[in-house]
Length: 387
Image (cartoon, rainbow, N blue to C red; front, side):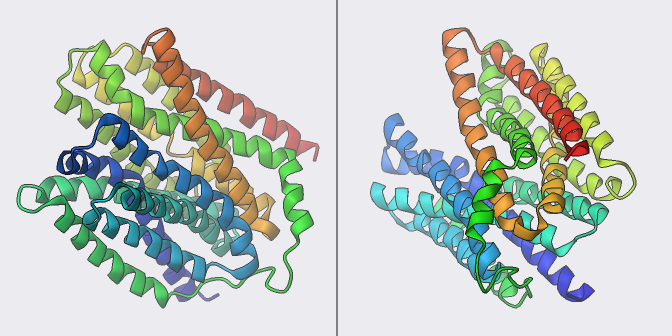
């Protein structure tokens, strides 16, 4: 593929990743308005939320073999439409089963796009330095989608209903999908016959499993930060609720800016050194958070956390792309599915320990996760020497 076509494909991948960012943040952005409009109980609202991770998990499971056998383009476009139709459903439907279906469609499309866009970029750039750099830049577009959605809703909500805002966002997304329709995508490596036995064999690959479990802990940290930071600061500090929400924004902005910087740094510095340095920075962030008694310290902690967790997905997926290029989509599917399970499981562990002990365990559990990531990465480096 020539340089211009490769760049067009990369732009399409970035659009897809921003759709995933939108899909991850949409529900939290519109749920308060939806709950108020439909007079939902806490139990009903929770039942709605549960369909998002279910869709993401299914999307993460299915995208790999489909991409490896049939190529990227059709599934990519269908997944973009899945997110779009789910969003439109949220703006129109007032029936709970239809809302649940809409949320599931958002999660399903987002889950596919998360894995497929990473696999697509890793397939486009086979040079190690280029691959890590481009995956970092791609990851920044998750932050752009995740930050842009609540900012837009917050800015326009004074003038328009959430339904009208979502329909406007949907119209912009439709234009983006039309642009992506004309983008060239790499052809399938296994169009004639899919090596099913070899694909199943990836589940026994020790290197892949070690790398996947690094992402297991990383995803658990990211999910726990989104779900537990505000409650932790609310219970352990006197910071105003509005400022507490801003600490989460600090983390997402730091994560996004760091990934933009990594796109340059990964071309100049060894990715192993960057990854370990980021682990240390994330650990310092959670230590800072555990001693936070005012907004400045809490914000500093979350900025350090955002910087610290920025490198894990781009670097680990770059390594997976290098080691398993012949079945890249399926290998990415294994890694990302395990990471989604980690998100759910570690969130549940934090919730259980917070209930049994106290919320003070939250930063401690996060530090333990980082230590596990450090250990697993050292194990991978040792194991890869003797492969």
